[in-house]
Length: 261
Image (cartoon, rainbow, N blue to C red; front, side, top):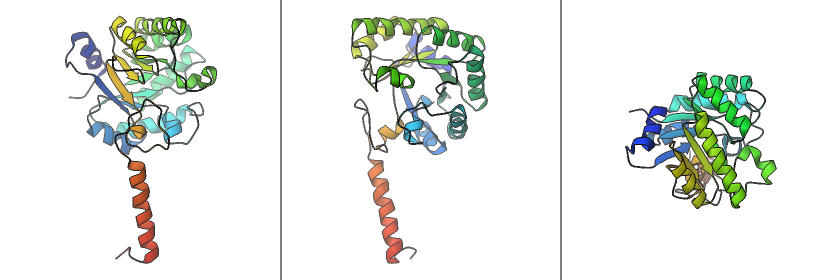
């Protein structure tokens, strides 16, 4: 049975099934097919693809057209999971109208929901309008990579009481605006626990401890494809090294005349 926004909400509100939500990222049809076949509940076309697939140092250079291309490719590979797509930097910040246009374009590309970063008043307003127009929204608080310059790097957030109170208030505001779930990134486990208890919508943790309603990781990190992984990522395979060795073997066989036989 395909996963829907309503089903994700009911998992938290009814406790059925009584298991955390598994979320993985995808950036093309191949990665989408892999995580969908693995049984991920949500496939996130995250703007992390700017770093994973396009080689940027941050997510900021990513354009709306970049995301649309990747969203269309991922849609062709996803059959069962709920597909959520990040709105990239400056595609929703300038006005409500631009946010609706960008999010609507993502739904036309095959997304079933979009994700916005931040929980201040401007973002909350965007979320409220998108939901009113029938566009499901996933929130994102804590470390929000699109604000990397403001944070001075990819640093853990919510370590002081003032920061923790702000992040909790942002999460509550996003829920009230109509978000169906919220990503909690790189915050203390105790804060993630408090937010999860305070909300009736699911929380999805990444570097936020074990108390969230679900967990997300970047698939390239899970598979060991990235040259660098964040400290909270768990690597389940070393496909990068295996791929290098396989390619080296091919090159060697071509040069020696062993391939083709």
